[in-house]
Image 1: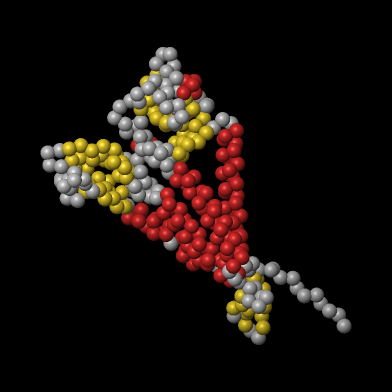
Image 2: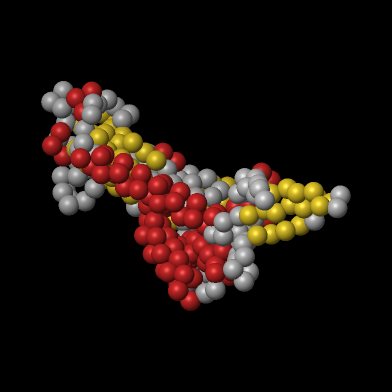
Length: 307
């Protein structure tokens, strides 16, 4: 008796005709999407670390802006990359990072306002009302600055995210059944991001730059130090719409008995902005609906059959 070897089929799909019906057998690897996400995140983080090491080895340095003096050019938490390239061609209008002579342990990033024939420089922050009270010498300058608004928040968040994701992966690996892991990890990742946002508060924030009295109350100059567009207003007074790093002035019609006043800020987005925010908040749900969760084994089987 001659035996015919079984036909080879693709491991993904097996289609057979039996009694006029067609049966599809689809095999999928459990945890495939989660593994892909882990590999992608590892590659991205490794690439960033490698780029940072190369940048440092070539003489570059990086800083995160802590004050709003550079306005919209470098709002609070902008990432500043400095390089020594082109130092001999510095001109008025260039942004540099330096140690001020009056406080050599501090680091400032301001714009050059003027250069003297002897090579000394005068600087000023974009929203500051006066030039800096010092004269810079070339040896005070760390380097020419490249400004990356908003990326400093991501740099600050990376340690929180890495610790949170590592704990989430370990705990779900050790203490949860395999069939629950995908949903728990998606939910947990959302929680980790929310915790990072709560700790850093990157989205909405304001800082009062100056106040002054008027005949009927006061005025206040404020700057937005968060990432998102906002509307700042006072009770019974004016309001001003600000983007990150922008400065506005408010009129305050009356003060409290102790001479205080209150400011409030709310998100002020366009319809497209609200749609984008909604999509960002819906990413975990969209992941489940569009990409789907990987199937889990059932009694040693990892096949899903439909007729």
